[in-house]
Length: 245
Image 1 (cartoon, rainbow, N blue to C red):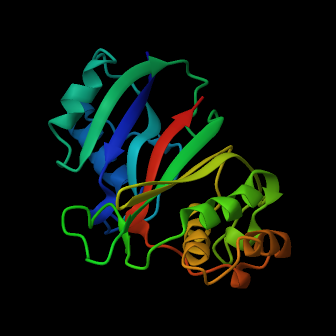
Image 2 (image 1 turned 180 degrees about the vertical axis):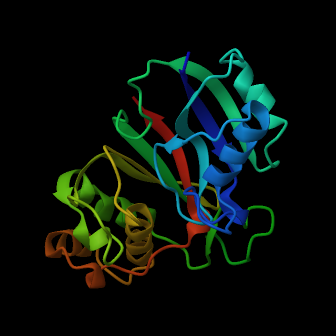
């Protein structure tokens, strides 16, 4: 009997060329596929909920695969963790209906973009934070972020020449928070375009540095012109927080 197994995955993306399997490159999907083969002796297809870029992290990426293995569903997590590198871990494994698809069944996704905002460069957090030494104005950033709430065409915040059927997405929540030296940009939406969160973060950072007025975010959004937005924020600050089904 073929079973459909859902995995919840945490990873530090620093040493990987993103989620998607690529020839001769180390990827999260590739490592998972190899670990499942070593465990089950099956060449499986792994479906991921989202294709995180090189250097991007995840607290709860979701994937699923089909297998003929008789291993109890909950035991896949422990077994695979003995075979995976130390910077990838399966937090949970469960059998789901055959109709479940980690990408197409997703209803909401949330990312955080994490910044350390101080004069001195970080050491402990350097793999997971983007260092900005200029003091950021959080209130200006939140004012600008508010223009992005709701359903819009986010072409202006998409990587150039990205393949997609539609650039319309709905942002349900976006907030900018600061605690001591740490700034977090939190975005929850029904889906994201390629580099969308990093481009939003880069533009909000420019607003926080007072390079742009908060209203500039509205002009960029309405223009659908990527060149009006600021540069893409580095991958190290981005983390996939969760996916809802």
